[in-house]
Image (cartoon, rainbow, N blue to C red; front, side):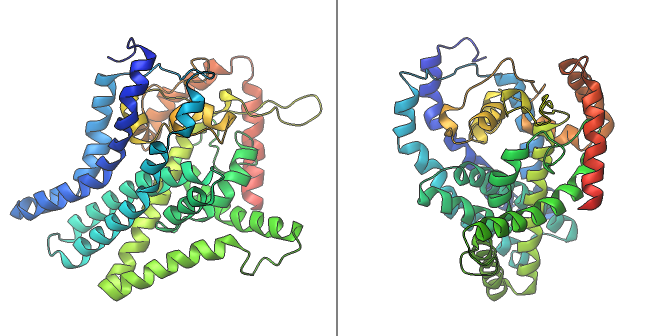
Length: 386
């Protein structure tokens, strides 16, 4: 629908369309309102955010189509980088996320709307919204140098108790992406259910190890005020206390449950972003540098707007500090057949996922499949020794 629109026009259209990110928390409010008006059907409305994100959005993605517009490096990127409104969009996600989980916690504990099935749907829905609002936006911000943005990214991640991502993602994942050393790079023929527990454990441990090594290089102790992970997890603990004060133990249960689900949402996306891709080993035994070829790219317009261009992941990994509004589409990068919303659902059904994605991996690495199987063996060895 939009592929033939003039790139300058598309860039102007997208400027305010990034506010679509707030559709995610809005679905929670709409879900609560409709449930309060629905009587016996209230529990079904608890699942509405899930249905919207993973049912309606994929359909709209294919109807709306792709966005081929890239900003001109010389004439447009400098001005786009300086426009403060793009930063405002991401920064206001922090108070919105706080409001969303506080509201969702109240509905879960004191709303008297849902039975146990409805409560399950509500927690799942809140976790998915956290994945969109807290982790996705936090991911954008932790790559930025200004302290206001960087710290806001850490605070967003702390609202879902996933602050280790701030350290491991930047110092670990971006260094080792698409190699056996990276727990967030899924390997060829690996199911998401095999990937998730390994990624959660290895990334949590790696974050603390990386922070300890960083502090040791500076002559500082790992267990000290200089350890940023202590501060971020301390903020998570503070939120848990506030949920206890406001809602009791059920509030604490809700806070950590939505945190876990938001973290799982992130790791499923990680699974999608790098499935089966690998960096070639050079003659000197080192891995080739990271390029746009080491991440799956997806250029579906709607999900890119909902996720601040996260799906232009190939450019992000090649140039990690580029701001979301200037990320580029690489046609030569490996391309996903859908947006993240549809690929997320597909990943949860391993036979279908492999039927769709394995042929794409094999076609992309025609003649090099031996390296994929070699990397699989190295990953298994690393995981077993972790």
